[in-house]
Length: 325
Image 1 (cartoon, rainbow, N blue to C red):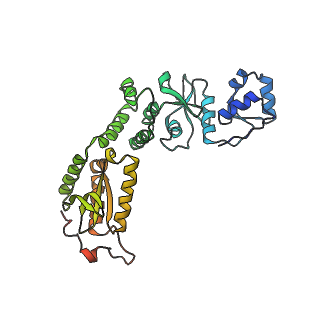
Image 2: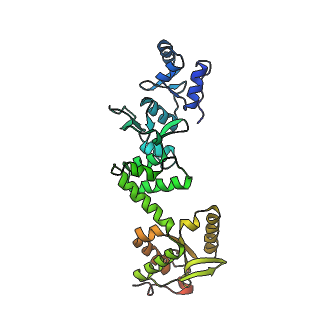
Image 3: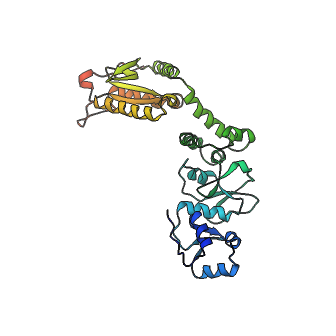
């Protein structure tokens, strides 16, 4: 968001500072660049400065972006303050958050209206700056996030950090070793282990796991590694026209694979197949849901025409009997 500031009413140094800081400044910063208390007071009276928090002002405007609110909250916390927890995760693009800004500060005291202060003395390697806003590093942000949100949200944030290639000098493993018994450490370890387990599995191991799963729940055994419409499909039930791709990030987490996979799905759908993707995590964490959905697809109930009949039952028969364990 571009902040429009009245350049004629504000000193150039103040103007430059405000533009870098999303249109907000702190009282201490104004005195550091030479404004006296009386000069600041006059600008407050004339509306050139608008109070946001005690000692923090918007410069020449009262329409604040989300980053401006985060910046103002950090400035209110003092020189050592940094954006943290859910707000930091949002700034890094790891999660969505529109709640009260969370700011980690040293010392003690109560949170101010509109700001949630967290008390901690952060080492220098757990602090950084993003888009001019002092903020916890990505590893520290993830550890703090684990203290205030469910583990599923931590896993999603971890995955997003990996997808974006976000890293810092201090790794998450280093941080977990630094705080072996700290709050949030256990949840973070579980999330890291869960994230790493999926990509580490090989294609053959994932295929074997899926076939064991199919046998355990009593589904018909599919054909494996078969050619359909010019593509090799991991598993297929030809009569029911159901094709399952066993998704492993090791083999599918590239731009070329992304495009190829979606081309295959489109062509299979156009040829009246029902493509599905199953991951290691789904097989190990939500097997009942995978079984339910496969049964629906194989019985022809997942894709019905507008007259209420299955698109394939008339041509291929039903798989109802074969699907019973």
